[in-house]
Length: 187
Picture (cartoon, helix red, strand yellow):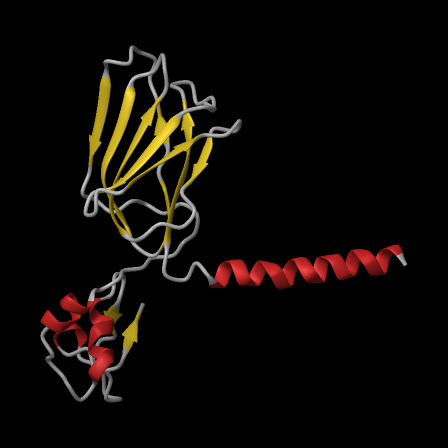
């Protein structure tokens, strides 16, 4: 009887978990860990996340494991600021957030509150959570793309994806390299 209750409980948990994932399909998430110079986690760090385009800011505090999580926020460009008494203020600018998860960790240095470290980067952040490589094109970007081969439609866009290449031409009618990718693509 006890085993039946455990199985029923696990079944209900799995069913309810699916609803939570379905609701986050168009949102983003920033999460990370605040640490000191030695790598030890810092609880109680105030993490301020500001959407640079809208000016909307949200404030989070790291838990006992030094972790913070923004849960569900809109895609955009963000600034993340880490502050804690006795440590230098750490600012990370130009964090481009698309649909999905981005990890932004804060390694804080001991110092007075008046000292500030600003990290400015326009480079995309490396996702260490998984091996996924992705890119999101806006409607405006898709509209401005040259439509070189309307007959192939979306297959021409494959050439523009990160890591995509066309197969070299051959006697079997394959594509002819990067000059005319055809439909023979490899990602």
